[in-house]
Length: 267
Ligand code: BJW
Ligand code: ZN
Image 1 (cartoon, rainbow, N blue to C red):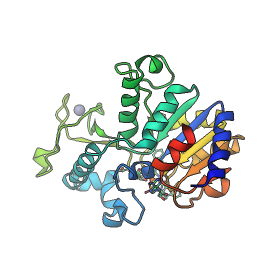
Image 2 (image 1 turned 90 degrees about the vertical axis):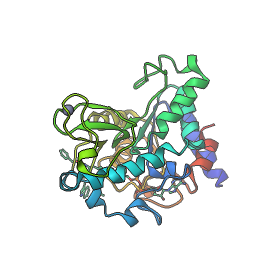
Image 3 (image 1 turned 45 degrees about the vertical axis):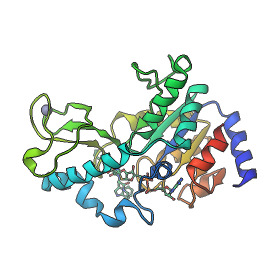
């Protein structure tokens, strides 16, 4: 590991008041989930436009649900890794830490719930999005969540963990309120991101540091969160085994896997 880089990044982190953590699929790679664009990435084997657009869902909802059913099973059988847990602990132990994720796997939320269960009083009453039931500090999920559904007619959103029967259109899940077809509550290409991105951009204006972990930083508008922090005078620290379009803007780039690097950075 790059000891000097870690030291420099720790120094930036300790001086920062407001910290925005932006994560992508790479943080969950160390839990065993495939990334999108890597060598074994999901999109080496699937054509994104066939699966991750509203047009694809309109054309073949059964195929799209089949894919998301598989993704759900993969995510549900994984555990949050040392990077998710270290970030969740940081968010509980320090004020001013906000985790913003592009991931839809729910692993940051599960890490937050684990940490809240370890320190129930520490998590109580802390900022932004806390789960009233568990006290966990939840991430801002920019691209939705595999374990939530949205009604294609009435728009109702709710948590949904039941297995998906994608054998035929008739067996796909239907809305508990109006019985219309449900879709995964995921932001597909060409769709707007909702209020989470507005909150993230306004926090980016105020952040002293953006810690970017495991994203190729090619998908907009999420990737611009880090550049907004930089333009507003904050610094970027990047954790990624590979260079990205953000590398040239980063004060420190730490080359390595998230589960190894992040705990040494934030503990
Ligand atoms: C490790 C590691 C380890 C490996 N440790 N790291 C041209 C220019 C600019 C923009 C556009 C454009 N054409 C179209 C657009 C817009 C489009 C876009 O950005 N496209 C680009 C791809 C070109 N964006 C959109 O369409 C967005 N919506 C939008 O713009 O709406 C406008 C609008 C406004 C108002 C009304 C209507 C519309 C929506 C984007 C939604 C993206 N959704 C997805 C798919 C969800 C489906 C699903 O999950 O099934 O979200 S795309 C996919 O990419 C997924 C991810 O969240 C996202 C980001 O990927 P991520 O996380 O960075 O993963 P990878 O695989 O790319 O990278 C992994 C990284 O980890 C790598 O760097 C590895 O090195 C690293 N790594 N191991 C740490 N152990
Ligand atoms: Zn409905």
